Image 1: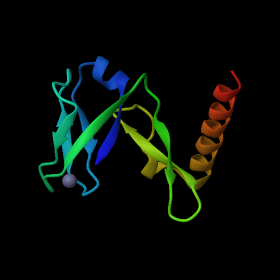
Image 2: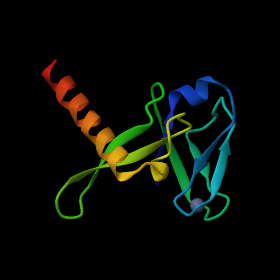
Image 3: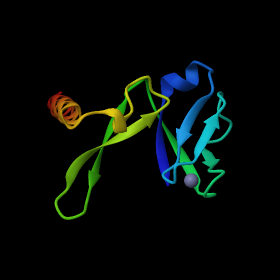
Image 4: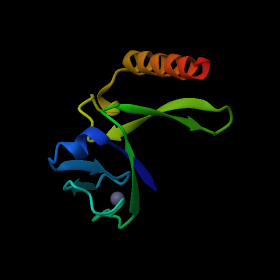
Length: 107
Ligand SMILES: [Zn+2]
């Protein structure tokens, strides 16, 4: 299992929560010593992948049938959590992310 962490959260040196899929919460105390944490609830090892800056979301692909881009949360970000977004807001973000991907490919 892995999760994405906002680089900005680590630079701020303020503890921040990382949510496990099981609902467990791990508090990360920057600076991080390791890139792995263990969930106290389900004992899963979670690998943390640091994303530069404070991008609230990252695009992932759901390969159940058609590859559908899905939003994955970047934890520690100051952006609104995905589960609090409306469907319209999610679509808007997905649209922006797709445009960014297109833009970077043209460079
Ligand atoms: Zn867990």
